[in-house]
Length: 75
Image 1 (tube, rainbow, N blue to C red):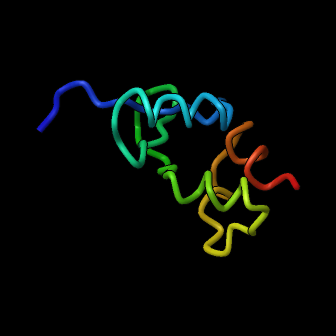
Image 2: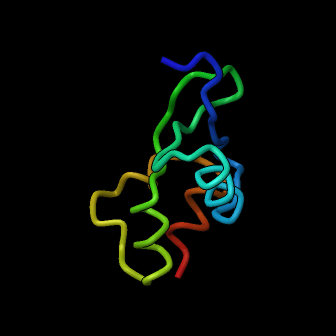
């Protein structure tokens, strides 16, 4: 197990998340609040769906506050 887990904040842009996924060699990141409590997860599949213009059928990012969710949902 790794001790230093890469995480995204709800305010992270999709571009930032994509870079973090690549730089850390992972396919998903936990999304954490200001106290580092997990509030969600964002994956490569989420980014691909967004890029393809497909809806978030599971509604996963709708529960997240901030730009990460807004940027994902926005057409």
